[in-house]
Image (cartoon, rainbow, N blue to C red; front, side, top):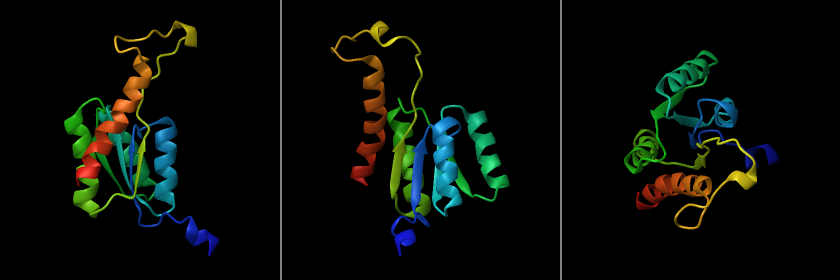
Length: 134
């Protein structure tokens, strides 16, 4: 019974930034447990390689080239899940950037916020906005 409580079998899962690293590990974990996973990345070649790797391991996935800074691409990402599966159960906004420098070296942008934080919030907002309209 507890196993069913946490089951993701037949759940539809979209993960941005999932052609490598943490996003890829999450996608693999969901797929291995029976979820219908849609992976994405800004890097089309890396995305195709990840999709092929998953399929070689027996997991069927969909893939969408996605730049989370582009509103239309965010909408297409969510729409892909809805068109293919008719629903979206889980959305993990993992795409990001890694500007590596000491925290004290980050500067505020014109709006008074941190550019990296604004990027992270925007990518989530881009996907979320379209989803609630569906």
